[in-house]
Every structure is written in structure tokens, then in C-alpha cells.
Length: 248
Image 1 (tube, one colour):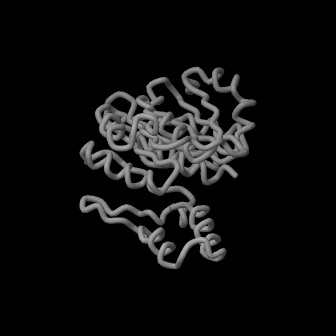
Image 2 (image 1 turned 180 degrees about the vertical axis):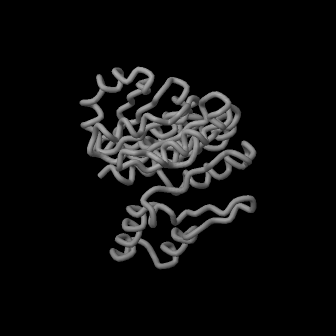
Image 3 (image 1 turned 45 degrees about the horizontal axis):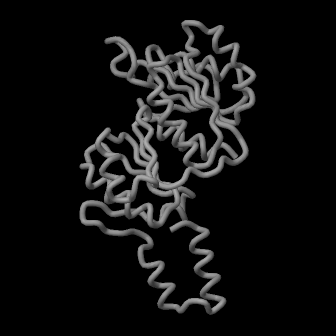
């Protein structure tokens, strides 16, 4: 249940349109709901402004579908991350085709309607095309939270003139998410060009000595340019969520 739903419910109670018992019944799923295999945090929107997202890893398709079905009864937009190709079919069977949107490159599912974007702009930047999956996870997350996203892809330091050509777009952004693997140098370069916060996302893209993204993670944590914060390896969702919180 979202904040506006609770406010509407209380206004109806005050006006005498519904009884105390009906109000209690409508609020009975707060602050959580037990499914046996999952305990849903239905109170999270009231605390955080956005509902619980579903991480599909380690869950069966049926479990994901059951969780999303319940969450979608209380929320207008619900996200599932790291979804398998088979998961969307199971979700559609539970909630209906028209309510489900698939984003295969981001490995995400959105149940419900995408909100209209608010003011502000988040730029999502990638070093290479191989980073697009993680970048799209960040972009879709931010868009599902109601923010406008500008995608600036394949502008890594191996051809830094490509990045400089996009400088005006970067300057218009209120927050920038920079996704890079290999040596992870791009966030430092971007931060040196703008006066906005940069959220760095290391990816597991790279050859052996990149250690599945560890090299990029350490490079980003040791960024020389100030204003760079780092999320975990391949954590596009975390970066998109943080960017949405900063984009006011």
C-alpha cells in the first residue's frame, strides 16, 4: 500500500464513508505479509518511497510470480531484477500479459505501469557495449522510480574523444551513473568534467587480471577525482536506485 492510498483511506474514514472495521481490514497487510516462502515488506513504500524490489536469483519462477502478484495488489509499479527468460511467462500467467513488461537486456520485469518522469535527469554512461546489461538495469530502475534517463553508451577511455563529444549532455544531468569494466577508469574522467555526483558501477567485463570486476572496483574506490561513490560489482539496480534518490 502506498502513502496516497493510506491518506485516501483515512479521509474516507473521517468522512464516514467506511467503517473502522473496513479500514482495519484494508490495512491488515501492513507492515508485512506472510507467503510461507517469503515475507513481503508491504510497508516499505511508506518508509522509503518505493516498494520492495524482487531479486529473482535463487528463487523459482513460481515463487517470483507469487511474490509479484501479491506486491502488485498493493503497488502500481513493482520491479524484479536478474530475471530468467522463463520467469516472465510465469509472472504473466499469474497477473496477466497486459500488466507485465519485459526488459531482457537488463534482465528485469516490471509489473504495472511505468510512472511519468519527474523533473531532473539522470545520465547513464557506459565505457563499452559489453556494459549495457548492467547499465540498462540502472536505467530501467531509475525510470520505474519516475525519473528521466539519458543514455550515453560506449564512450570509454580507449577513445576519450567520444566522451568529450557528449560533455553538454553530461552537464545537463543532475546525477551520473558510470558503468565500466576492464580497468574502471571512466568514472574518474567523468567526475573531472562535471560538478554533479557520479555513481560508479564496476562490471565483471574484462580479461583474466580484471578478476571478474575486482580490478575495476578497486580502481573506482581509489578514484582521484572527488565526488565519486561506488556500488558493488554489476549492481546496476543499486546505482539506479541511489541515482533516483539524489535526482530531485
